[in-house]
Figure (cartoon, rainbow, N blue to C red):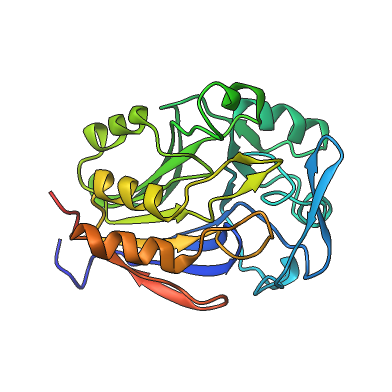
Amino acid sequence: MTSDQRPRASVTFLGSATTVLRIGDFTMLTDPNFLHAGQRAHLGSGTWTRRRLDPALTIPELPSLDGIVLSYLYGGHFDRVSRHGLPRDLTVLTTPAAERRLRQWGFRGAIGLGTWESHEFVRGAQLLRVTATPAHHGPRGLNRLLPQTMGTIVELEQDGEPVFCLYITGDTRYRPSLAEIPLRYPYVDAMLVHLGGARVLGVGLTMNGPEGGHLTRLIRPVVAVPIHYDDYPPLRSTLDDYMREVARSGSPTRVLPVRRGDTAELPVGAGVG
């Protein structure tokens, strides 16, 4: 396949962990959060926080979607605006626990994926495969009491040939079990990194800058796109924390910050060995 024939991939950053992914002929939405600045996101058990910044798009402004990748069901990743505004028949790939709740809400296209399970979309000569990967929300032991979460590998094939691989970390802490991901997927073109070092009631829930740097060195993507780092007060680790850590480590990965509302092209077929 020549470079002229190779499909393209891009990411549009909407804020929080919400992105629009255009991968070949497919368009996917990640972790839909469409609350506006000042609105409350409910965290569960009577706790809540307020969003600091507006999303770059509203639901009516979204392009036509093939599906949604939802790392877990939580007010900052699937809010009440999404619950009432997104199409109920849209395919939502998520955890088994989130699938059960979404179906209770009428989202008949919800599909729960266990770790390493996949779902495929096909259009003509292109196939998009979405596979759930391990993710560990919160510290060891306590993560079992928190909502089930997942990471995701998104692969594009054209005419049966693999051409693009994206890893979405989901809300996870850095854990040794994540080392299985590069064993299964040694060539990753791009990674969306959920950062922010979120802390709720004193509990660290997501990766801070150093943890994000460790995972970037482990996965070795060509490009890493940091997301989920400044929309809510519990996010206390800055983008600069992550940028400094990756630079300090001498990682071959290029960090590509994308401003809210902007679109960046992602490398296709260039995975680091």
